[in-house]
Image 1 (tube, rainbow, N blue to C red):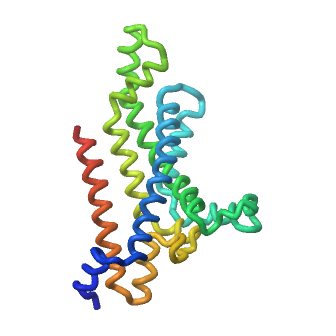
Image 2: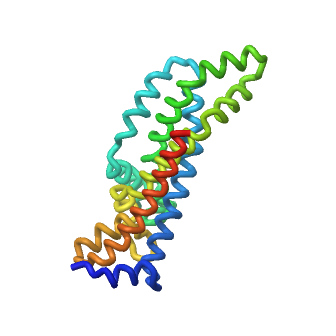
Image 3: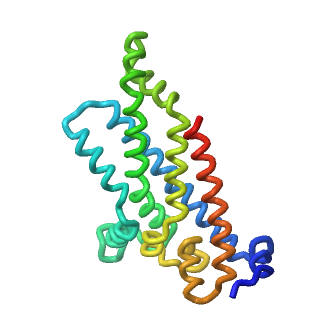
Length: 224
């Protein structure tokens, strides 16, 4: 059974493994969210601000990929990076890089779809005003981005929330290797099966605090 004293000691003591797991989780989540944000905001803005034949199919594709099972992304990256895969020679499987790649595939459609919806809701209005003022296309995009900056930050934080709480894909491509690719979600799943509930609860508390903080910031920005 869980022991409160041991849990507190793990959280505030000198448990190097717990701190390494938390640090790696944050590193993985920040990197994957940053890359996904750059790609998602760019593609979302591009899709929303242009009229072309494949616009609606691309939006439907992005919306569909939002619900892609994480294990499917993990399987795809595993097949690409395994020794027999097309990118196997890079030796990236069971590394931080492979986990970031899997999460980017998982998060980018989410940010793209939400950003496209946010841009499209204001683009026509801002563009009409900007054209009347004689502003070039680049400044039209800039002012649209500026107008929606709080919503965009909230969307990116939602992506971060999904990244830090994801377990399926990172377990497949990372292998849950101690002091190398073990993150909070995969560690919790493992130690629960081993019966180490103190360690699982300590990690769960840290994960919950991070998720709560990110969601609180995102909700505050959406209200502004």
